Image (cartoon, rainbow, N blue to C red; front, side):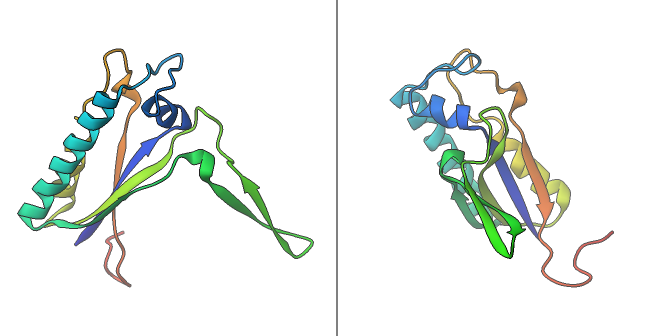
Length: 141
């Protein structure tokens, strides 16, 4: 079965990785960012080698987001950057195909071990895992 591993971050996290410090997020150096990409690359490669990797993508910072809010007078309402700095948003995802939800959870847990600069509060970082519904009857209730 396929599972989506969803990685979350905030605009503040993206700012820190771009070298801008915040109250709970020191500025990342180029070496910090390189260490993060190296870790995530190894994490993905391990899933490729185990045959569980399907696809993965990172997403641009939340500030580059547009949200469409239903209709007003029959016209879709579009807003830019709808996220406040403290809200977590989807930062990237992996699709894996593995034998069980527990195995997908093990794979996702490895993402939380990604290195960060000293002083970064990583206790609030989280990853979600959800089965991918490929059709009726694919996901148990």
